[in-house]
Length: 192
Image (tube, rainbow, N blue to C red):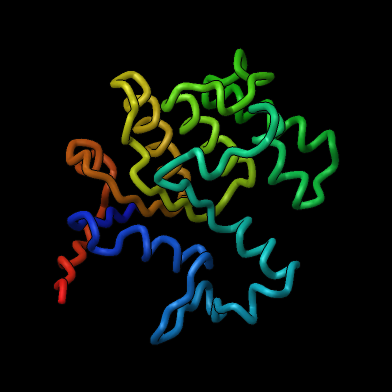
């Protein structure tokens, strides 16, 4: 299933996504994922945090904040290595993601040398290398050319057909219409 989250700039879409990913915590209320309360105490346990972040993949609105390795290959391989996979499994996952996101020719390039669309594909490949059950995408179609938008739409439709859960926020109404099963509209916050 795919849930699109809509709302004006400042409505709280990114804040909601950060809460769902355990990167921020609610001031009021509680957040449960698969029956487990996700809070600072829970995520202080490194093993629990690893397993939680393996299950939920998050593509930030700005891929520059996600990319920090010296090559695209190492960027994609980073997550599986952190999960303790064998180097053979890391190589297989990384090569599969390079191919899936059409990044083979860029494997040895430093991410900061990539175009905006290439950075977004590299960041998404890094997220997908962990094979998450839930994929949260903050403006995934922003700054992409039409060909890349179509490739990403096809990928997300295939992912949805494979039974994965997708949450996305984007201003591309056409893409949302193609992908979303439901739409959640966040009200505009009142400025005081």
